Length: 282
Length: 166
Image (cartoon, rainbow over all chains, first blue to last red):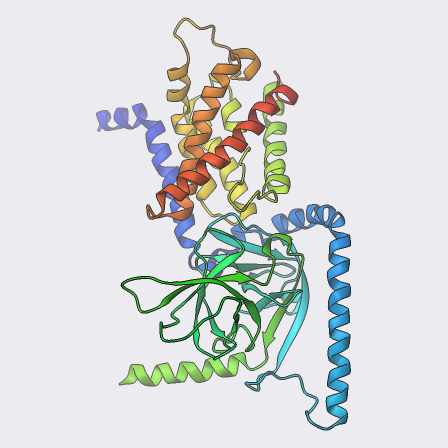
């Protein structure tokens, strides 16, 4: 027994090293079950407020660009209002904000206070949280209308978003031109491009084709802009194209975003869950 | 007592510089310099090894909390702190007059460049490997490591002329 203690005492640094590495790895792997450990990330109160106060300084230097974007957005919204007014006047459309699948969506503005693009698993922190109506699993789009990510965890006044530039996020997308659908993933390389998977060879593609959300998941309404096809190729051994999509949202200069709430999400998920339960019974 | 205050201030300054400035600087989408490791580099040579490893875990953990990378920085800096004495002995001649503060002014430019360069490279390689967590695309990881090491080393050496002179 005595010699065992001596052994530990002699190699205490190695044991400490292994112990600390084990703790780190446990932290790393547990982060996969996201919601559980939301304390040790940037949506907790201390790190949230520090990030926020310094971000406000950085934002000051970006004001002119942001103003320009907002002005442009104003203009395009005003145009839309005029068009809609006309259509309502001609009684072509009922005046309800629904997408073509009939779900009502509600969007809330938020500001980005922490963001990264160079890691393999990028996350974004927003300055709005539970108090402001942000909930986990709401979709996030940028101010220019491109898909950005999905809310991961929320505290009272902050929230963390899993960015589209994160290898763990996988969202359903389709080609706007012919409605063929696939999934969008990021390969961890360039922050301007993502990959569209599962589009079979028999479909004809063009560079510049628009890729939008499919509306199959409850995160995003149908038809939100993701990007345009930059390049595609056929690889041997697979039946699917390798399609590189240029993102609409500029992740490097992200500053104002919108969180989208699907009003009928809970209802849809309940329904889908009953289907699963029935399958499990068989 | 005085030395604790000095290292305490250094700790806070480096963590703030890392999370407030350098985490926002992402040149070309590949380069993200990590300079908080300078704290581990500059700890006194005579400090017991277990204290170095524990302090490295602490600073890595704090940086992790702020940059949403649980355990990644902590494990990389613990690894770096663990190999620090071996790297130190490797580059130090036996008859060299050993100052307790392993700075550039005390040990010379060449020695400091080798010492911090190899430790920063080890840290970055560990970090980027843990982040990707696969050997698939290893050359890309190596590429990122080299680029970021270059920038971190540049800032670390520069800081030796401006802030941490003695």
